[in-house]
Length: 90
Image (cartoon, rainbow, N blue to C red):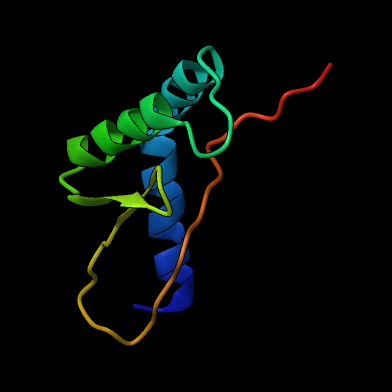
């Protein structure tokens, strides 16, 4: 696959799952948790990964989690990181 084909496939997969991503974001937004205590948030993300067939390693840096997605080869590695904690503002 060329880089353009890979990019196109990723964009199509994102668009196909758009509503699920937005719904997960809303579920996280209405129940914010601060740093190192985002247990419910991590569970929501773990469940979302599980629905995609991904197994997770939990309790990474206390409440974090990781999931690996394997491609057809090991020629490239992509990392995606997201922050799940809320910030308290007056």
